[in-house]
Length: 399
Image (cartoon, rainbow, N blue to C red):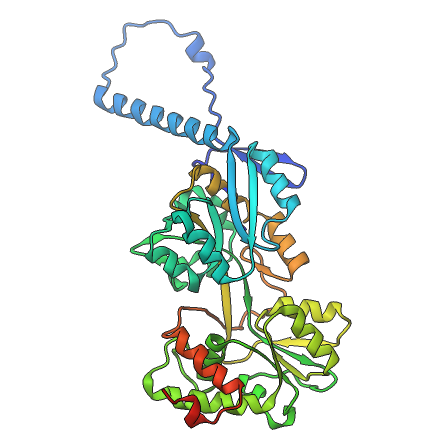
């Protein structure tokens, strides 16, 4: 999850333990000795009065804004956070509360549908900040449930890796030159393989279709991702927007993939169980490095590879609701989560990469394809369910 913003570049910094605490500017103007000893002289100096007044006005405005920001963040209050498990652990929340004097109320969701239900209810009036992936983010923007974010308030974005600072290059984050989200964590859908059965790391998605692994491939049970996967295998450059001419080919591709399937999973824990108990050779890792970490923890000798076609990847971001009661506090939360502490917790406890340090699961040359909304999620799911049930292509494509 994510945390706070700071006012300008003259903030005072205090260190508490291993964490850096930034406070609003404290400006003290002390007279120099020449000012203390000043005596009038006969020298006349011409002063540009309008310029002087304008400078004084700007200076006073700066001080007023600093005071308002400081009181907004440090006067306490309550921050209402909606997040996925592991994004706002109690110790992470406690540190933020100690810094700000605020109380943080965290609620959790486990599906995109549950997230939409909680935020859309009461026009986002129940929460101040929440985490959402870039594909899902679009409907929150379209329904005006989230507001643009002031990047100047999120100074820790300067700590992020270059690919996460280039927000305009991440689909869905910038609309009309306004930034609606701050990247927080991500996972790529790579390939996990049993080192005993597969000696050489797979380099292509086509390994999922390799007849040598018939009946030994563990697949994710989801229509949207499966059709994007098929589109990638067919060489499509638009895996989230299948043109009419490619639907039949994608269906044939997925029917062929079904023949290699050991079984289909939906939950992370299920994938670990099936991989171990049924001795799978290859796994399409919908949960990416999280799955890899859990399989290793289960004592399995597994490897992790990113295919040359690129890995589909979700990117969760912090966003601020239209009904946020304390904007500065919401910004402070986002800024805080971009520090080393919260980022390390994500990696160590969840196996999730953060946006401020290179992922140990990726090489510099690995390509990630950020998820985008698909052209027709209902149709993808309908056709996928027919494929899983064993239908032929003609029946799958029937109206």
